[in-house]
Length: 390
Image (cartoon, rainbow, N blue to C red; front, side, top):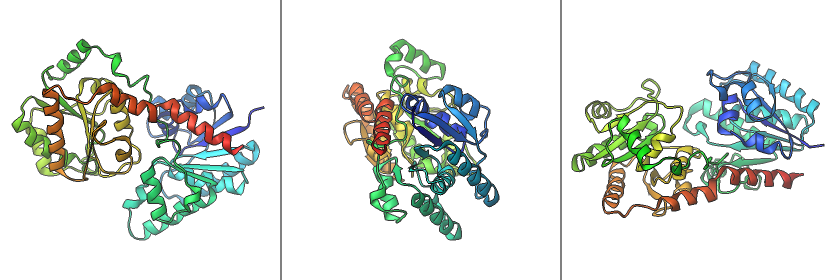
């Protein structure tokens, strides 16, 4: 009989999207049970718990959890988790996302689950100040104290956790080279598109085959470095008019608005193309020449891995995650945070290199991602970690 492995996320979208395929893989070795809130905020398949269970061949147990600080609901969820763990008697409980981590690790500790594992994919609390920060720091320390092992999904994040004294270094481990689930290199594969396909994809949104296309994928907000990117492109585009900047992502004017001068450029520069949020971003990678991702902060960005899997060189800011995926001069460039001049300089380097036929080798870029962050590579490393606990 297989030992039981319970995976917990606050919302089903995290289990169905961020951990896509991982639970299904683990069913070969464990009886896998998923715990998440009954439904998420959307009606998509990955946000529907029943559909996630079918896709991952995993028995799902609904336990309502909120993403906010809700003491009474949190207490109820902890009790439900505790009862579930006592009934199921798992060998391993492995949590993801902040609230599921706190409640799951505390309940697993009370239920005396032998292996209590928590993955950290980012620390939004670092941007919080005052009394709320004090509370969140305490909760973070409680989560780690209840866990037997904590897995930051990048080496930079591990350093941040140690610097903030959330737990001891001996309890921390980065699995493999980082990332929570890697990238599906069979899906993000440039060989799925012919040259003619790429020309037609470009034509559909007003880009010619002679244009050099920089792409950004993500939310169009200040925290993603959009103001600096737009300013850099505006200056570059004045010199090289056959450059295009393609934005794939949603706007969030109320939560994190862009600067007024950025909005003016977005409105007036016809070489900046905005296609909004897309359910399938792969065709946009296929039509692009390079990724520019000047974010201020990240966990372990899927976008940079996906672009690499598609053979694109990347310009990324020198932040946690990005500066681990990108190896300087091998698959892209690392630039200082919030530095428009540095973005422009490296965009020009990539453009001129392309014009001279001296671009990065797409196969080399793809191989660097596949060997370190291919999805099955990550799954095997996680499995190896699980089996070391038996």
